Amino acid sequence: MRRLSALIAVLGAIAFVVLAAVLIPWHPYPGGALHVPAASRYFSAEEIARASSYSHVARWLSRGALVISVVVACLLGFTRFGRAVAGRLRGPWWLRAIVLVFVVVVIGRLATLPFDVALQHQERHYRLSRESWGGYAVDQALGLAVSFVATAVAIVVLLGIVRRWRRSWPLIAGVVLAGLVVLGSFVYPVVVEPLFNHFTPLPDGNLRNQILRIAAKEHVHVSDVLVADASRRTTEMNAYVTGFGSTRHVVLYDTLLHDLPRAQVLSVVAHELGHAHHDDVLTGTEIGVAAAFLAVGLLGLIAGRRYDGLRDPAAVPLLLALFALGALLATPVENTMSRQIETRADVAALTTTRDEGSFVALQQQLAISALADPTPPAWSQFCFGSHPTALQRIALAQRILGDH
Image (tube, rainbow, N blue to C red):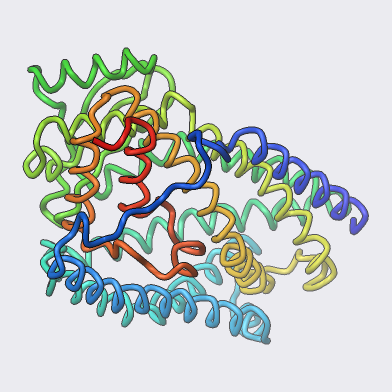
C-alpha cells in the first residue's frame, strides 16, 4: 500500500506540474514585467487612506481566522480527540464518521466565528455590507451546512474505499475523489449558488444584445444572461460565467448594473467571457484532479498505518487536520496560478473591447467600492492575492492598448 501510495503521489505531482506548465498562461502578455504606476496617480489621498485602514484590519482578521482554523484542526486531529469521541458513539461506521465530521466542522466554525463576526462588523461600519445580522446568521448557517455535507460525503467515500480495498485503496480513492472534483464543478452552480442568491433573466434589450455580441466575438456559447440579487447583502460588484456547454450562462450582480456605466459593465463581461473562451473552469478542474491524486498518495504515505490503516472512523479528525494543512500549504500555489489566469482574462477583455479608458475606470471603481488596498504587502499579495492588484491591471491596460 505504501509503495502504491508513493507511486500515486509521484504521478499526481508530475501530472500537476505538467498540467500547470501547459495550461496556465505564465506569460499572458508581451514585453516582460509591468511598470506599475504610483497609487496617487489614480486614487486620492483620502481613498488610499480609507482603503488602507479597512484592509489592514480585514487582512489580519482573515489571517487570524485562518490560523485559528488550522490550529484547531491540528489540535483535534493530532491528539486522542478522535478516539475519545468515536469511543462514545454507537452505530455503523459511516454514521460515526458523519457525526465526527459534524463535531469537527462545528468546533472549527465556532473557533473562527469571533473573527468572522468582527469582519462583518467592519464591513457594516465601512458600508460594504448591507446584510442584516439575521441575514448574516442565515448565510453562515447555510455555509456551514454546505461545508458539512461536502466534507461528510468525501470522508465517507474515502473511508468506505479504505475499508473495502485495504491494499489498493490509494488508487481507487484517487480515481473516485478525482471524479468528485469533476462532479463538483457541475453541481456547484446548479445546487449551491441558488442557496445564496436569487437569479432572474436579464430583460431583452440593448445591454443583453451587447453581451451576446461580445460572447460571439470571443466564440463562447451563452444560453442565458442572469442577474443575481447581490445588493440585498453587499455593495460588491461582480460578474461571472458558470456552467458548461449548453448550460453556460453569464451572471451579473445587480450592483454592477446599478452602479457602473454601460461600457464598464461590458468590460467586466468581456473579462468573464475571456475565462470561458479559455476554458478556465475546465483548467481548474483538470489541475484539481491531479491534486486529488497527489493528496491521496501523500495521505497513504503519511497516515496509511494509523487508525488500523485509516479504517477506523476515529481517523476523521486526523484526515481533516491533514486536509487543512494541505490546503494552507497549497494556497500560495493556487493563487499564483489564479493571478496568471486572471491576467489572461484581462488581456481578453482589453483586446475584445479595445476600450482602455473604461477598463482603467473600472479598476479604479472596483478598488474604491471594495476598499481594496492599491498597494498590499508583497507577502500578502503573493500568498493570498487571487487577482492582480488594481494598479497592476491598469499597467496591463497601458501595455496592451498603449498609454493614452
